[in-house]
Image 1 (tube, helix red, strand yellow):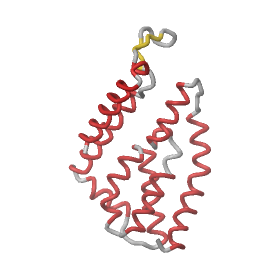
Image 2 (cartoon, rainbow, N blue to C red):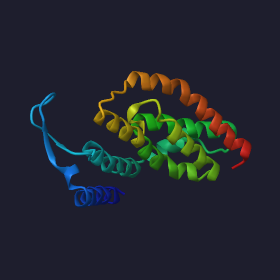
Image 3 (tube, rainbow, N blue to C red):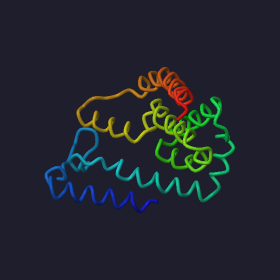
Image 4 (cartoon, one colour):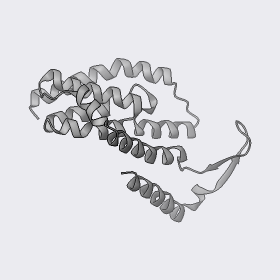
Length: 181
């Protein structure tokens, strides 16, 4: 599972270097830390983080993570069951990130059919809007904001997320039950 992520990072950086080599040039910055190397627009922290997520998922699944997931996600397809799957997906996404959360929970959710998978997708895509590291998209967004000199407060992000996520999570999961998808 980790090999495709590493290959994708290497290919992406390689192609970027071929097409836009000036973006990969080394720059020294002095203000915050002396002689810090920066390589243009490549988000190196994320390039290391994504393969690490794949390693983490593989380790959790190899060491019995599926049993823990089964005990917290339930099995049914009723409204409460779907809210449980979505809620577990949301909580796990905020704890570890939505990519590994989905990958760890997906085999258990799939046993209950498509509607449970959809509830998990709702949870892992809506839910991580509370903590900044909850979603790779949010990490990329924050990285680009920082590159442009815009600082996003983790407290403000969490406050807005704590208000909005439960409303959207419940409404979307209820919509799944109404449509019968």
